[in-house]
Image (cartoon, rainbow, N blue to C red; front, side, top):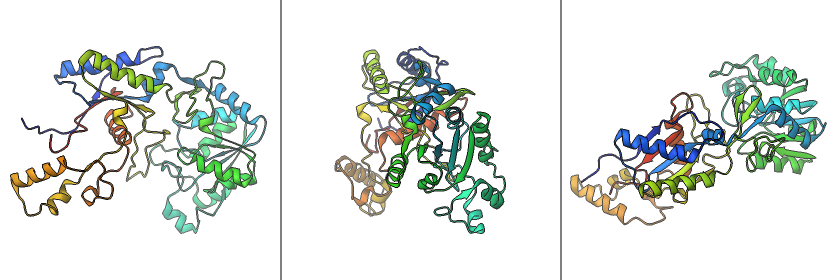
Amino acid sequence: MERYIGTVSRGVRAPIIRKGDDIVEIVVRSVLDAAKYENFQIDDRDIVAVTEAVVARAQGNYASVNHIAADINNRFGNKDIGIIFPILSRNRFATCLKGIARGAKKITLLLSYPSDEVGNHLVDLDTLDEKGINPWTDVLSEDIYRQLFGSYKHPFTGVDYIEYYKKIASDEGCEVEILLANDCRAILKHTKHVLCCDIHSRERTKRLLKKAGAKTIYSLDEILTSPIDSSGYNETYGLLGCNKATEDSVKLFPRDCQDIVDRISQRFFELTGKKVEAMVYGDGAFKDPIGKIWELADPVVSPAYTSGLEGQPNEVKLKYLADNDFAHLQGQQLKDAISEYIRQKADNLVGDMASQGTTPRRLTDLIGSLCDLTSGSGDKGTPIVLVQGYFDNYTK
């Protein structure tokens, strides 16, 4: 019988997860209960994804402001520190900044402008043009920024992040100076000891700083890579990917995720006989065309996934075939011709005109983004996502 439904993405409800919970069993049972009560089947190559937040919660992977402060002090001692290119986020960076400031005597906070790395703006581009400011070359002090632009509040949060971040550091008894620039090397006129807080550009930033003469260079993925007084940690990503838990603690990116996804897949096979793919996902990789915010504040979309999710899509564009190769056909003949073309397509379509306009991104980035949009970031209560039919095509 012909199928009329392609990919289906379902948010799956789960209990509130606490430290010590068996995340594998919760994920599997939640999906199987949903299948039973909503009357759908589990099939081979279905994808079960679980958000990193509940994995880290089950692990108890948390750290306090004092833990952050201790590791900052371990890395930098009593040196004046340059803190460069943090994102503007109460959830992602504010608590980290509190810990950094608690572990330092003085920081010089260098912010990128007109926006941070993920698109949160300190000023809009049109205003920069009006004032004759070149963000690639001009270094602005806080005073000059205020003279030019006054107080700019983020349109979504209503926060003046320069004022907000300055107060966080000052409240910890830390002397703070704020600069705006896009050349990381501008910090070296103020200090040779730097903590790079950018996410996806951090390796380039560190390379440029080292070549320019910085003496001490760390990035956020090198802070809390091991426990401090029994704290949580992440050996790969450190503080990258953390979220605010309380006013004085953060939830870190989860650890040991490969074992978790492998056990989820194995458990489904034991209970259903189906070979289910599994992944842990965080932020999706997509951009808001209105707010200009790029969602990916985590270091990766997926820290772990089963082997069947490796690679990229290998797809052809149906409308290209219909308008070109088979423009002379209609109805069932057109459908049969395109179906046969898909069945005979090459294993690698790079450079083939029939694949133009398809999405040459990693499967895990695409599926993780779908899952992030499905589960949402608020009160939906669906930290597990079941994706079915993702690997189907027009011939199925």
